[in-house]
Length: 215
Length: 215
DNA sequence: AAAAAACTAGTGGTTTTCCGCCAGACGAAG
DNA sequence: CTTCGTCTGGCGGAAAACCACTAGTTTTTT
Image 1 (tube, helix red, strand yellow):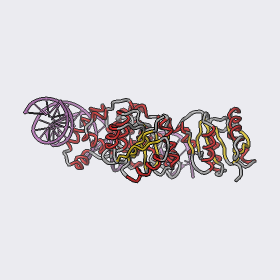
Image 2 (spheres, helix red, strand yellow):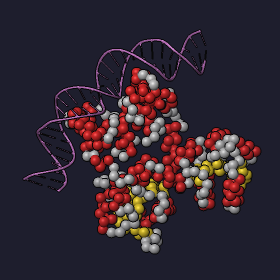
Image 3 (cartoon, protein in one colour):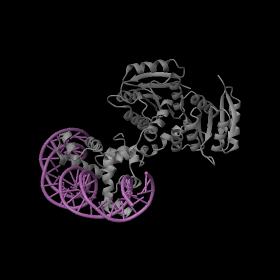
Image 4 (cartoon, chains in turn blue, orange, brown, cyan):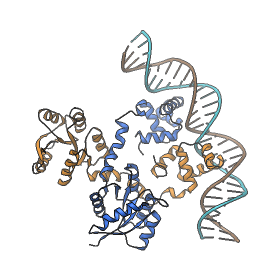
């Protein structure tokens, strides 16, 4: 079995150096270069064989999201592991969606990094354990601790929100619930008031964030 | 360091037996009994010291969710790892919310189970790798289908969408971009046409799904 | 250089949302 | 029994969104 050819993309040279140290000192891995943004990554994979890219998300020129999507489309054999400073689950999801196979935090341990590489090269996913914790914690705090504005709403109001989020107009909603359009507007008004929202755009975003509707 | 006292709760004796085998043959672990439902778990923890419960979610009498919540309240020192047949993220979330520190699938490997126990006993979370995969996979397939309507849009249109999604009105957007409100409306119209949307509510949802905006 | 696409701006009109205010009916909780 | 919250219904008006159609300018592509 050949060595796994690894490319590191990050706009901070320190990170590249650090990962190079880890990769170079591991038998079955080969460090084949660094890139400071997405465009460079693409230039490099065009000129030489690459098996795996450790990809930072925040980069100038072309960011990790865009670059991963590009690689996934044009070089589907190249595996990507996302690197990030922040344990942001949403960002992780987006990277995965764009074709990344794993997600590592930058302060992750050497063993974790090597584990991630081997898992991903065998076609499995790998996610930083730290990420998984925050993944669950994330919506814990909203729902369990402190209070949510969701509690201020009545069942009927929640129902109205759901219908609004189905792109229905006041008339359609009134029809569906067999109530007057005035009533629906009245509810809508109270909702806006309680949630301190400006318009229905804000309402949709709130509804998604508070899991009143699913995307 | 004392052995970790483990209680297994599951309404299938086979599972209990299997886990007993794993626990008993591991040095630092001690199997102290099985329970076939939540009530039994509570009876057992009242009569003897328990460090950790491997808790099935689906049980008669009192299920894993309820029991975990109870333990978390009355015996906060007892760590709980949820056991489940199904890799259902929603269920996992609820268990975590109720106080479980980890989540294992029943077909998980011995190493995973032992890893989970040690991680959890050291105060960290542990989630079955399989679960994490399905967690992310969930909304994967939709977007991977090659072409997206996003390609139909121009940069300016994307920009307008982002501003709309920031709950800005046409006037505000026109102001910010130093163009006429008519132009903004014109763009908005084209967007609606291209994306076949009914109103801005649909636009926000589309924007989130297609990652034009972040929540 | 010509063609195509994108951005710009306008007119004119309809529909929908948003806002404030009011008020009766009903059930649950004090 | 009275109060509170919820659901209901209504009025009038302002603001914003939506729709269709036209058309000049700029940028990009061919």
